[in-house]
Image (cartoon, rainbow, N blue to C red; front, side, top):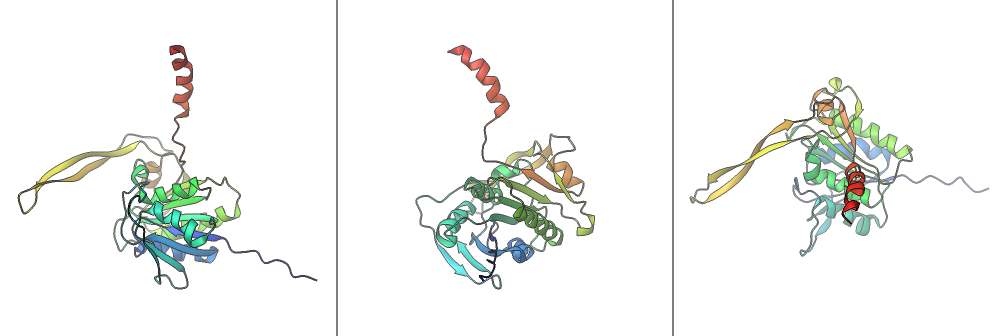
Length: 263
């Protein structure tokens, strides 16, 4: 009589944009390593604000590192999106069951998702039919406390691995920088219309040459109570489903009626 077939562990790909040595990625590895076989492929240096950039015209380097005890890990000279692409093609030789990006040091709510290397890595996985989640903690400090973020990352990933959601699922998860005991739980939200009102400070370097430094203030134009900004302000962990299809469907419907009259 043959033995029952042992179910294989799910493969969990982890990447980030803060670099493979950041405390956030270690926190994420520790949070989910009991849920499956974790493989890390992450940038060898900070790549914040890279968005969905890929490396073209320059060679990509990747080599194994021994940073996480008992975890297969590689550092890559490229962007977060490069890391996902290389992981699938050259490391795993298959699509992982889920891709996790983070835990980012700093917010990726509202308009930040457009610029975020963290979320672009997650979206790249989604494009490749790999369910994905980007995690961000609203604390830029190298000494940030990831306890609450780890708790909700583990809860959410365990749930996603058990459920059969759409293969293009991509979630943008932000965690308030408060004590774990103050977190009120997960709240599914929409992305707030909030952005930085930017300006460039003009300065002079020691040689008297001009340079510019981007500054600005964050302004929330969306006063609704179902947005990620509201949820985070009120100590909820915000969960925003995002997608790579940028089609404005309401406007498409309007244009289909109006532009056809021009023919």
